[in-house]
Length: 379
Picture 1: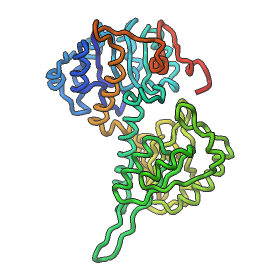
Picture 2 (picture 1 turned 180 degrees about the vertical axis):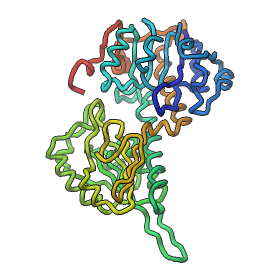
Picture 3 (picture 1 turned 90 degrees about the horizontal axis):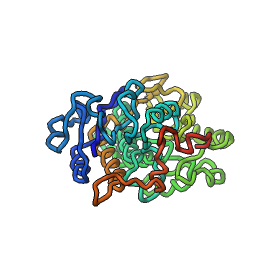
């Protein structure tokens, strides 16, 4: 069985879907690796390092993918890459499937069996395969560092001969994996941290990390989480109340980090232009949802801009800005996804199509888009 790892073509993508460690582990299961030359450059992994791990290096993507049983990628293929794929190949990647229905149809048309890792079910067995968690962890950490780099003051309280410097105030909006890591990082750096989320279950998590939880409407928040553990889209009256509570709180914050995402839908607006107008001069807003439209309408995708007295950070692909660790974790997720699919005796793929993990991630099979969430408006 052969695995191909082409270089990512997407703009601002430095990650790679295989690490030297993952090459060794999957090779031990009977796979042969072909990696496109230069695929690991953005993550500081040279072709020689991959060779030492047991991989063959191909001169280009077409050569790498040709004849492969499985293709591993960070993101789904660009339109210009589709001709490289052939019927029967398996593609495993973060496909952004719910927001890329046309691309999924194109993949199905090529006869590719595609697995979207972002659709993994929220079950204990799948935690080690969860690319959203591994990459969001890094994004939450990096968001705090980015904010600290732009803020014109220190995070921790400092006692100096010239007087005391008060700690910075950091407000985290959205307490998923990225939000929790942002809370932990900001606390380690000495900031006073508050956080909010529509899911009441996150209150205990926030407080366990030393943050203070800002509630909006406990009654509405009781039904704010899907069975899969994701935030639901809330009714308009909730957002009106949220605006009132947040508007008052945000006036005193030095840093605001927004992380709220709803799978398959545009990011909800959490910070309005009116709220921004009340933020302290020199304050910073980091919008981790900018790729899905942003939690603030003033954020700009891929840019750091100053509007009025506030600095907006809208970096694209935040986890990819820590490409070495992000690639390593993504590759481990893939190893944990593939390993159960291999028959220990024959060393061949033995996929249980009724398995919950397989059904949750399978997007294309036998020339058709098969995932039920892509055939329905319900996500």
